[in-house]
Amino acid sequence: MCSKLLIAALLTTSIARAQSPVPAAKGPAGGPPALATVNPRAVTSTPPISPGRSEQIREVCIQNRRMICGQIVKILPDGLVVDSGYTNLLRQPLMRSWLVPGTVTATRATDFVEGNSPDSVCVGLVYLTDIPKSRRLKPRLYDYVIIEGYPAGKTTYRSLGTIQRTVRRYSAELENAVDVMLKAEEAAPPAAKAK
Image 1: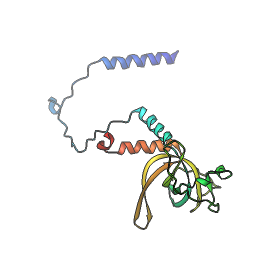
Image 2: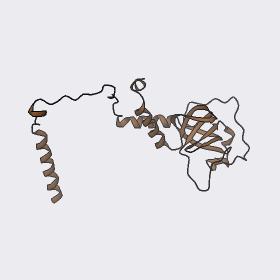
Image 3: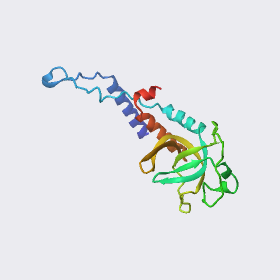
């Protein structure tokens, strides 16, 4: 009963404040307010991302998910570079785990083209992030990976010496892929967003 009265009092007070006139702003010595100078280069016209936009990105990530099955060619602090396209890894008993030892016999499919439907086998070098954490399974160079990945943009890494490569980035976690895509969209310049 007391909480209902408190809520009613708060609503009445906020409605009364909203209906009362707002006093005009006054500048120094009671004159007109001083104009603020604004640097036009500092102002960005990035509209906030609508709540439905994250659901749209989530849907795109689900529609473009790929089966990453390939050999680890580089281990980076926050992910793995995988040469995907080893379709003969998609067999039992190998598919019981996302990580398969490098001692397994597997070859890369020749003349294989990546499909455009969900769960198609990914072909080529990809950067895989958000891999499952396990005390028992630690990825090593030249081990094999069999996991579903969600697109999370592109990334550039240093492959050898000063040589840099840009590859597609996939996340093993859908929510992390959506977050990465939203952050990339927010950081994109306005001209890129219009496309």
